[in-house]
Length: 171
Image (cartoon, rainbow, N blue to C red; front, side, top):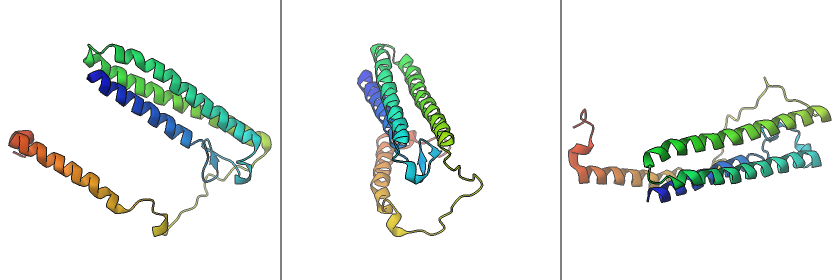
């Protein structure tokens, strides 16, 4: 049972880390791979080649860490050892993806310098001081189901365990 739980956690983390890093590659607000690039150049072949290379590398890293996760699942008899190995596996995967992003950001900065694209002034930034209701992504009511579930779980566990579930300072 523990192997199934660890396997689900590892697969979820692998998919989440990979998806988040791939979604950041597309570029938004004038940035591609974390580097300011003129909007007119986002579709240029050089920029797209760097983005494709980054995505391929992130997928290779995901495949490698998928394979590296198998030994963690094979030591199912020692659950106490699986916890630290899962943590190390997760941190190593995050570090590898972060290092990959840094490498391709450096390549993008070199491309920007080579092409002579303007570098934005770091002391100048825009501040949106107005709140636009149409731009709000999610209604605040979406917080309600999670809050209700959390409260129901807390009340249920207190009812099942009584006051022994409370810390001694509150009991």
